[in-house]
Length: 115
Image (cartoon, rainbow, N blue to C red; front, side, top):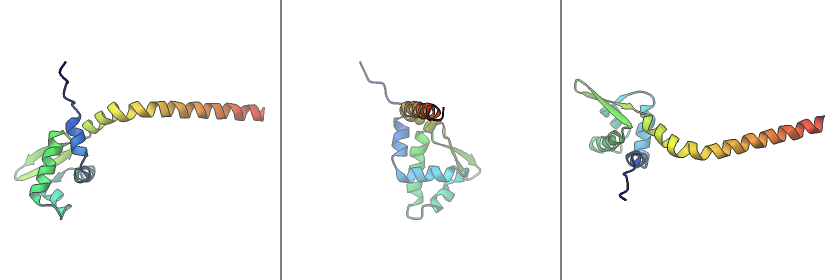
């Protein structure tokens, strides 16, 4: 049986780079032009920043919009939410349930002691 491609693979690839994660952090403040992003990374060439943006765009983490000669880059948090839903929330539920049970048990013991 052929394996289905992982729809989150481009997101994982995009998030694997600390530079791309930093770009996303900057975009949380609001949309930025490609030039404004490049200014925030003085050690990178504009071409390198554009390559990083292309990876982010492929993963649908960045949505570009042209306004005249400017290209504005907008953060799209939906793919990150998909990662959270698929991986993080699944593993936090047992911990949350265990903590609630522990709290309930401690509160019950505390009530018994004060009774």
